[in-house]
Image 1 (cartoon, rainbow, N blue to C red):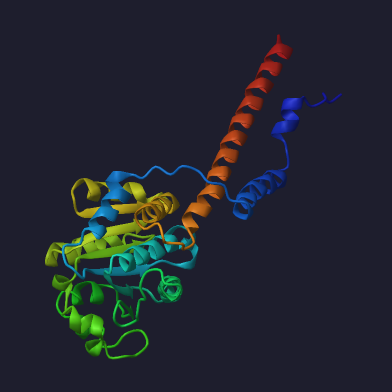
Image 2: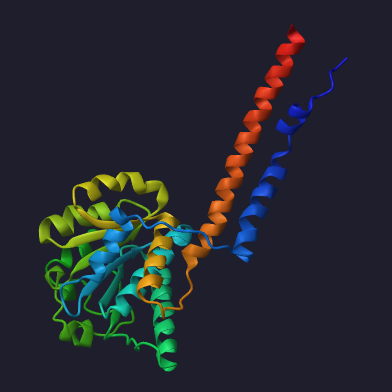
Length: 302
């Protein structure tokens, strides 16, 4: 006769679909009803990057963003791109955006248009200033293969991007003429946004050969690979996953109180944190049930 299952065995044999459903509920509810949670800024990575951009030595600094994010990376990397552009517009830093891969073009263009619309809507209400395409920012687009723009921009940007993403002559744009932008020597920093090793490629070629500073925005899972470059000083700060993006959003909110843009990473952190807590609790319950069942079996065998 088969022994009746103990409560511990029943708990350990719960249908996995129920567990998936519970995780889904825990993940979705905070998205609909987000809650505030404290975000501690990591000075070594996020803080160092923010201060480096905020303290560009030139009156009209130039920040080149290599936006190499894909749709699957969007939850972590897209808020970083938006935050970088916001910070630059607040500080009147000129922004040049390029993509090394065609899959990134749509998200890069979307981020530029989103932030430009935010600033121009506030300017219409008498808060802040307007930003103008071709004067404050430009979207360079994509030129294959990746090594061509990485090295080519060190020599002459117009050889690599004679026209912008929309087909307009880059040489005649005020942002290029007024700031005399021709190569890396006329820029203050490169921001490499990627889920791969692209920032290391910029360090190996653009920084090593032309001496330009490099900073990075990366997914959380690859953060450990980049800390040696932080320690060596080859990376000027770094944003790590959604948490890093939320930290940067917090710094922007502190330094620029009139910024009313959506804080996407901060909203996502509530869902991410709740899901992590739920998974940890389930692991603890599973282990507790396992050891209690072992205890029951040991008593029966005596």
